[in-house]
Image 1 (cartoon, rainbow, N blue to C red):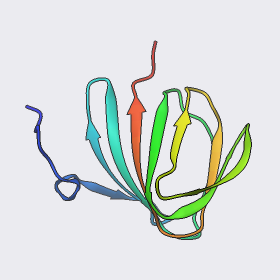
Image 2: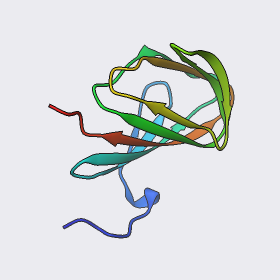
Image 3: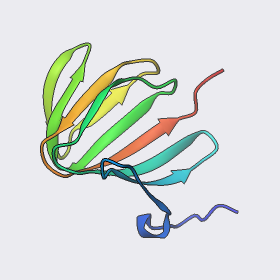
Image 4: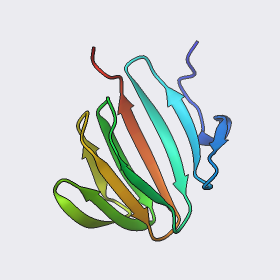
Length: 105
């Protein structure tokens, strides 16, 4: 059964080699993921098979897409359609909330 009320602290945390931590709440058509990125980390150019929205809760950095390079700060929102490439450099510790939609068949 799905918990209707949960806390990020109640979700299992995964830690990547570069120090990025993630906690996920899966759903049937989408997932919500809290990501904490340490200052100085970069995400190289990549894309996803699914649509993604990303809310910047705190922190700052530089986003790169086919539309160019743009700085981001708390309050910024990214939207990546399926297949859209993107890269980012994180200047300060950054907290993100990703909404990832199930890829369409």
